[in-house]
Image (cartoon, rainbow, N blue to C red; front, side, top):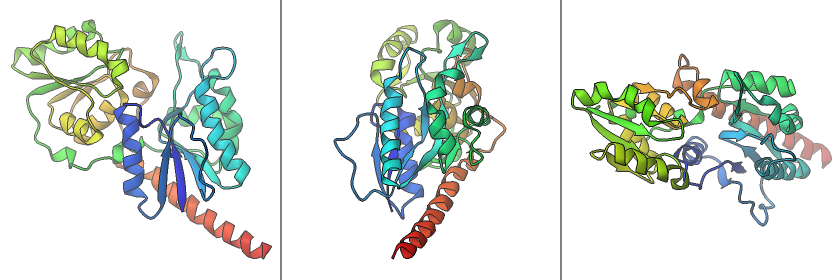
Length: 304
């Protein structure tokens, strides 16, 4: 089948660039095309399915009016629905902003009709599932760990660990936070690596700041997903400023630290779940596609 997956790859975020690699590896029997928020002039006429995933695509601003990201994602879903082809959400996460001691889930309201009617809907955490059910009550909704856990072309868990602390910068990795975390490692001779896993427009300032604080550090920018995983896999400890730094650290069995002000997706990660359970997203999609083809074949035969 010719299938389109819509995500956020291509913008420089290592985690988002990982998902197409996972889909290609796990679905070799299908012809896959990948899109993002840059809407194409047209979608192929022979597409048989359009799916949002993976990653934190279920997001909407709480500013007045519908936020652009939702409009772009809705465009793809509406095309699939209008054409009568397969569609749904595979391995998605919710992106929500703090509101006091909780999170502002109400901003996701515009997604509710699509979540309610999606014929396949898998998300990446139990917390995401609970909120999706609040929004939609879709009985088909299910959750498995993030699809990024399925990315491991190097056997990361068996990689030799070095006396290195790898810092993955983000807005929640502050100098004050590092002052609490790093001194014990530095005092016993650990090296420091600064690994950018976000777009440089987001990370550039933070890299420069950290480089000034730790001039002896090795700095890695613009890594591929495989290079980022290899760097984390060879570390002794990771300061996981970005969600997929956490994911890669767990894949590589490297101890990690989640900053105090980390975003919702990192704080809600269920560290008790085995990473390999992420395969549930793919298994669920395979079954859905098989059932869809049988149903479509029956409908065509009936029409004939």
